[in-house]
Amino acid sequence: MINVVFVASEAAPFAKTGGLADVAGSLPKAMQGKDVSVKVFMPLHAKISPIYKEQMSYVGFTSVHLGWRSQYVGVLTMKYEGVDYYFIDNEFYFKRHTLYGEGDDPERYIYFSKAVLAALKMMGEKPDIIHTNDWHTAPINILLDYYKRHDDFYKDIKTVFTIHNLRYQGVCDPYVLGDLMNLPFEYFDEERLKFYESINILKGGIVFSDHVTTVSESYAHEITTPYFGENLEGVINKYKDKLSGIVNGIDYDVYAPATDPNIPVNYDLRSIGRKKEIKAHLQVKFGLPVDENIPMLAIISRLADMKGLDLIAHILEELLSLDVQLVVLGTGEQRYEDMFKYFHYRYPNKLASRIYFDQQESHAIYAGSDLFIMPSLFEPCGLSQLIALRYGTIPVVRQIGGLRDTVMPYNKYTGEGNGFGFMNYNAHELLFTIKDALSYYHDHDTWKQIVKQAMKANHGWEKSSKAYLDVYAKVLGK
Ligand code: GLC
Image 1: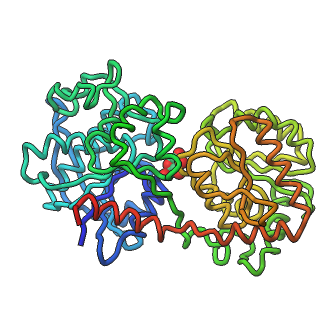
Image 2: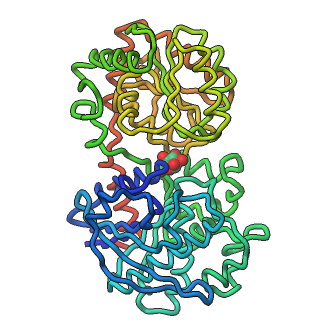
Image 3: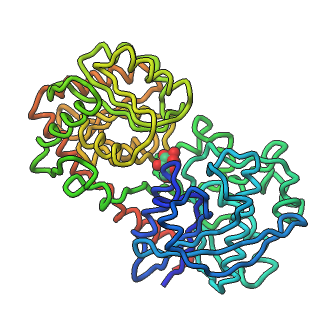
């Protein structure tokens, strides 16, 4: 039995801002079994619903030092879908409205990382592996390097570090080393944490973990190049022997067109015609003309540059001049929120802008639309295209990162494929690819075939959770 402690800054359903939470909320459940026992640690964020807080029980407390200051560490726990979740309680750091974006983020997550290590000792829980995710938990990998040599409790623990997004790195002032991490200044070194004149926590995660994974094979390769490497391609190349890509899955119990309670009509491979009923339902709800023959395009996304929204901005007018309807769900950068609101006002028969996020509504849009648009600038894995495929909504993607690994462009000669793709980060390439997809839309048999192929793609966790278990075994020399 391998004991794994999985650490993340967010996990669904407790607290979620992005895909990391979905992975932290579904991968542990998929791995849990006879060979592995997984415990998940995350902060007790203020926004965790009281429904869950009421179910938590108190484990104990300890404290950690940040510089000369001592900080309280409370530990709460609850079981969720067969997995034990542990929550680090400290109101000073986590009684905030947002998970990130606070001036003291490095301090908050260094605290959290220290707190997890201290909590394990307090609980007498010595895992075989600590699996950290993104820079927020990478201080654990760095601290362990030091603790291992100074405290027998931590001596044999191995680490796996997963990069979900290389863009956020936790770059901070070197004073953090002594004042928050209580580490000697030797760590301010090119071979360790030094990054220009700062320290880079994510770099430390790469340097000090036994194995590094990222969330698709293509992204694992891409980040060795300057275009995708976010200035860390040098370090990544140096350690590429311990780097591998494991594509994310989604929870097939939650995203299940045949049983999903969030959609007005359920369907499966034999009844894909019913998608049209859901489309009609959406058209009524969104005040769009009710017509089953108008293709409905969907964007469900954080409205951020990374998601390729600037490409959409370039072609929105042209796109809306076609015989299509576009539904947008999500929040994000002001200029994109404003853009969609403005075009909604100008083209109320074509565009429905829903500038908020609602889980239930997202399921209905995934199910009722025909095409799902996702032209990301970079995409470590991407989960939305997997959900779209599952609901038989055909993704139009830029063929990079996880999008390239999960969406197979339709090939008119062989009839294979479950989506449409383009390569260059170019707005008109996107538009032409959408037009290409639309050219098949009215050819009912072909379209039905593509929809079926999409729904048959298998992106549950089965295969990838096994790949993680292989990584654990390898790290432990088993
Ligand atoms: C980040 C990445 C996304 C990935 C998710 C989960 O949000 O941007 O591509 O799917 O993490 O790994």
